[in-house]
Length: 107
Picture 1 (spheres, rainbow, N blue to C red):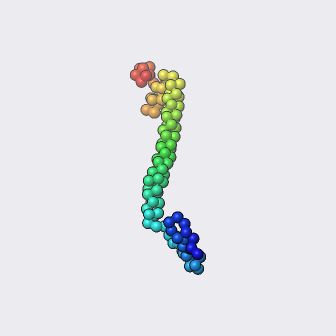
Picture 2 (spheres, one colour):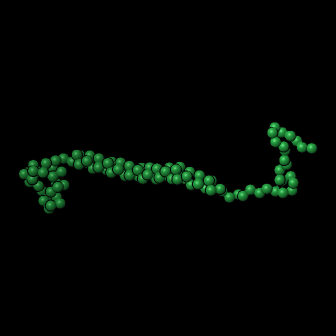
Picture 3 (tube, one colour):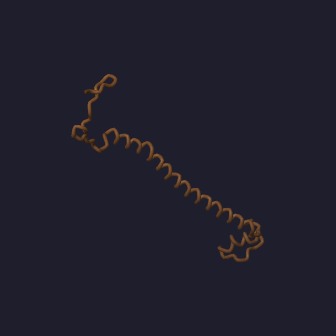
């Protein structure tokens, strides 16, 4: 007796007749191409952006540190009196007691 469904007759599967249908477990070419496209369009740009962000963070930290050091040095220089400023300039030249004329010239 055959079971009728809408428009076609029922045929039992190959597994019920003793034959086992096996499916290959390898990726078809379309799956490989899709995986490569996802890798190229999705993962690589995000990885590159992350790498650039880390580089930018390092450069930003170094720049901020240099600015802080520069501000510290400027603040220290401003704390010095005019005579001490002149001595800092003149002392390396071997003139440890600058004249009044030298002080006025280097201000």
